[in-house]
Length: 444
Image (cartoon, rainbow, N blue to C red; front, side, top):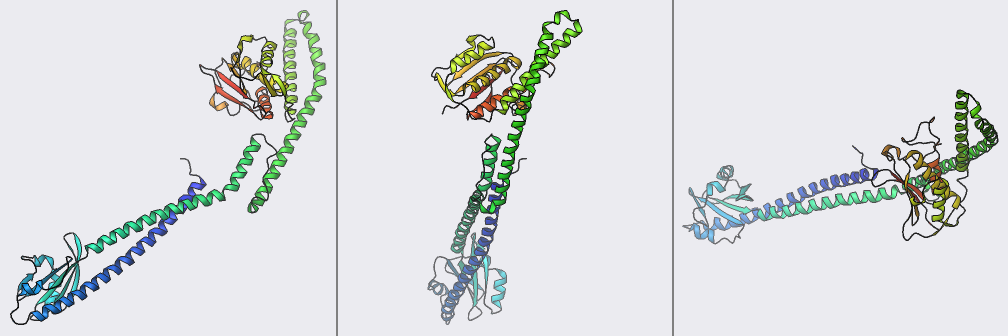
């Protein structure tokens, strides 16, 4: 399972922290507000009940009409009154279920002459029952509905929950913003490293951009300097070695050529040995030439107008290939502003690669800003595509060292020439099978 990125993890941590904090604040705030509101509502209900009980107590003298007495009370729709007097229950409405409305414990408490209150559920809503003893062992009960208060608290809970969610989202946004700015220097390092990997060895980090990362910047720039110097030394070494090998190699090639012309006068084993030596000397010469070409690849390109169609046709003629392989896409400019020698060698290497390893080229296509070579081979497997343009790498279709004349540098030289033109070489699948190498050369 792939691990989440640092930005995602930090943003999630901010969001979880904000959610936890806001949840705690929400819970504490709700509890405090609900307890305060319930206490205030209960106090108001008790005061109103005592006031009504005073009216009932005064009206119970003589022979009162209890129903009229209860009707005289000024109560709203959220209050319900009962009177227990001389073993009977009275209310403002007929047939009130007094026994089920008033809890038994509260009735027992009131029977002892003590006032009390108890919270109950009535008709699905919270309510408060207040009992106040009056004269003649009568008890006045008032049931106060708390439904409106409950609905208010439910709305408050929804608002506080929405606030917690928004705070959590805000925490995630803050985390994303903070990590974005905090990781910006690392993104600059990654971009610089990518530039060096793509061949831009002049890429460096600005030491004044992020003072906190001064040590990292200095180390990175030092590494880039050392890498550039190492590559320059390697190029000089390859160029020096190749140049020094050329003279004795030419002498050896001349001697082998003399022996090769006299193969008919040698016995079979000697003739075969001379043939093998001649082939290896030719391969050695090709390797030295390729190494010299790679050593010169860091030199600036010499751009000049070049008829790209004539150049591609000459590449095919030099290799004895039919001219009808060349296809020119309509709208392609005739003259390209490129280094003629480099482009000709790059296209030649692609054609040679198709001949050696791709079953031969089936099309050489010239289009706006690109050259393509299609072959009839099996294509390049996915696992080999990332290294096919590296030096001394030969694809799975290449012959073994003893049976092929390739050096493993042809495609690497193509990549170097493409990079020198600020272009690139791309490996694609040819429709119908085979490989398609596209050399993209932007015109300045």
